Length: 224
Image (tube, rainbow, N blue to C red; front, side, top):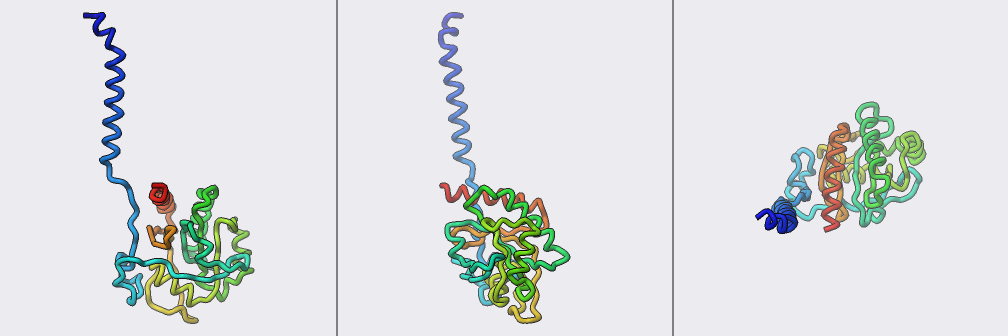
């Protein structure tokens, strides 16, 4: 009897190991795959959405734009073709939330420096003050890497329309006129098809870590 069990011991161990692998594979196959939602204007707080697009429930994408970065280069959607990017709105003279947001964007820059698939885009909401030289000065102070992170300025109405009609980042009142001023802590995750896939509080480091987790999920979507 003892010799019988010794003879089949290796077979039993192999069978047990194979069974464990099969169970694990079945478990993983039955787990729901994590997929980020595609956000539409109708998914946001109505206060953040221009009334003209508040009803939109599908096909929303970030509008075309043409702005100048810290080096005076024209930046358009073509520069983000085939890329995922993270957008926000700031101004260089902001004494309150913007320094925290910039520090958190710098944190993302460091985390994503070796990832050519992801870029960063910060829009100035005071383009009359934030000239190209002012943005360049700020970029040097904050350690902005030109190849990874664009700080952009340009036509105020265009920037404010992007904030309100493309990114749903701020309350919808105002049209970008001389006395119009927006201030938002939102970071927006945009996929390669120019769709919004997540929003985050740019003043909270824990939200930056959540953003990085979501980014990994989004990149996995493209790999599959």
